[in-house]
Amino acid sequence: MTNHSKNKKLLLNIGFAVIGIAIVAFLLNAPDETTSFLPKDEIHIAFHAIESKKEAEKSCIDCHSETGVAPLPEKHPPKYRCLFCHKR
Ligand code: HEC
Ligand code: HEC
Image: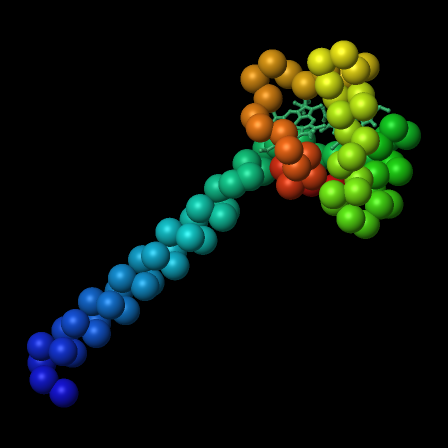
């Protein structure tokens, strides 16, 4: 192998390492771990038991909508998949 192609290979490896670190950093940052968990109270206990996140989430907006008993804060982020952010 020539010196030139060795250098190229090293650069490529460094490149992959940097990308890998960037991805891990991204995953560790989102979603924000300060996001409140799904409460473990009478209201929400049933949703802990439903294995499929998608199934469990169907009822959330019954109460957490503008007209529900517990509306979301005004500045709430996009809310399609509650349980990805509000972990159980
Ligand atoms: C029957 C109505 C009802 C349903 C259905 C419901 N919630 Fe709630 N939720 C409430 C009420 C009332 C509160 C405020 C009091 C409390 O914490 O229990 C609340 C509070 C919360 C909080 C705030 C907890 C905190 O620490 O401040 C989160 C997060 C939440 N709910 C997520 C969910 C998710 C996700 C679902 C669907 C899986 C869901 N809720 C379904 C009524 C409901
Ligand atoms: C992209 C992540 C994300 C998704 C998806 C999401 N939330 Fe939130 N939610 C947050 C964050 C972050 C806050 C805190 C916002 C603030 O402080 O203004 C919050 C706040 C809340 C609160 C107010 C109480 C608290 O803990 O501050 C409730 C209730 C809540 N979310 C319910 C829901 C429900 C129900 C869904 C699904 C319909 C949902 N969220 C989807 C990130 C998310």
